[in-house]
Length: 479
Ligand code: SF4
Ligand code: SF4
Image (cartoon, rainbow, N blue to C red; front, side):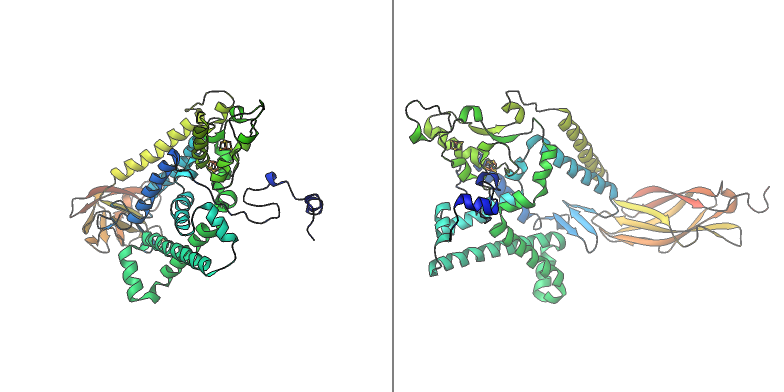
């Protein structure tokens, strides 16, 4: 027996439809979104950005720069090739500047542009709206035809369309997943490895299979729920946004009361909104933007494009739904620059500027001297003091370098390097043992700085300092 709505509310205490998530109906079932897109001015900008991002993603591991792919994050050898430069985990200052730059940029973009990142550049929106949905529309027809097909009983035609759609999606997801893995191993080794000894590439195979499944699940089924339920950025947005953050909003003063065209008779009070729901039907998350700012709005501007078509059709000015800010909505003037985003901008300039300076002034090699052995120093029978060390040479050039090291100070110091010259291949790191010996008499309070000159056959020269340890007190035979 079917209960009446009042009875259902009494039994299940079901909230009214408008108090629920847009993607869930009152009976708890998932509402599948089929946005009716209007190819307006914002949609065209988003499409151009999306195509640019697709090309960038697929091209970067294919373009060669300095003998390696433009981006290769080689975790196995712990070398990161980025636009012709090779970086190592020891580049910790660079890494810190990069991390700070990313974090502050997220805060700056979030506080200034709101959720424009989600609508224009987030891979979730970009791939769903400009790749996976268009394929669906190509095979199944527009949103209304898609709904009809889903509701229709299974037939040969429906099965063929669905199989074709999921197969094409899977092939695209496979290509995306393989490209993703190529960022870590390179296309060349990946293809060679998978074609000649696939069992030795189990890790890569698993990663490709896992990422493919995740992509198909996300873009084929999970879709808008990633933004409205799973993604933390939307929640973080509440913290980052202020009165001047850009947002998409409905002009309530101008639009209300919302009256359908057919009901506009006899001087009934009516705003510019004709209650056509074009904006709601265009929204990929099903948000009714006329109800105010909501976390489900991911800033796609598809409602703006939709409403502009309606307003033009009605002979009214566009802008009933538009980019604005909370301050503007209250009648004020939006402040582009305010202390919060000026501070973010200053910080991000410092972070990215530091990164740029560090990259541009990076030497041809990195030389580090660290303490080696189990004891801080050894007192030799001849009265000398020996310190064991480990010397690390990182070749940051694209050709092999041979390094030699000599001691400049203090007087009487001598150095023995385990391997000399130290030959280091391009983008490689080699560590060798070394022992520095100095007379006991040179120590002051158990310490003495030593200065080395490191040279390479490719013209690299660098002075490196290190603190030698020795005994406290006067040397034997001295007062
Ligand atoms: S598209 Fe414009 S006119 Fe139509 S319901 Fe939305 S706000 Fe109102
Ligand atoms: S409400 Fe408008 S801007 Fe927000 S997600 Fe929906 S269509 Fe995009």
